[in-house]
Image (cartoon, rainbow, N blue to C red):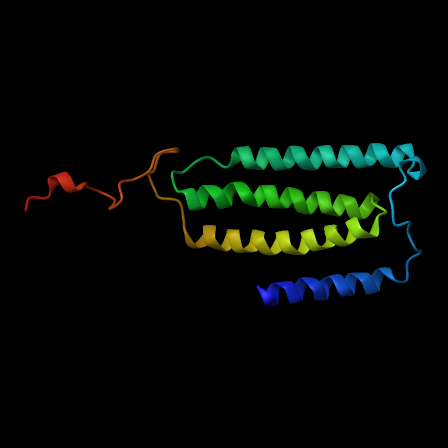
Length: 147
């Protein structure tokens, strides 16, 4: 966990250094100073991002394996968070929220990678109907076993 935190802080520091050459931005959002076209573009981008996230989560059909189902639904959820954070970086002006968005991008991408590796290691059970789970031992129950 400390390694992850150090990596995040390192990336944030590099991002801050890269932004140091840019013109300073106000530390608070002033909606009146944001052009109406920017507000429209921001809203449309957020709407598209949320729609993709919800579609991705809905497309993850239940398998009966809570681990697979959790990861399959959380990946599009996290991707939605990454997209929304990128939108914040494109339109936002509050440096605190921009730093938060940068951290969200790093952390959520790392978590997506972990969940994807787990899904790759744990393939869906073949022949398993959606929403049903196989018996604990796969092919029988213990009623058949005679002492």
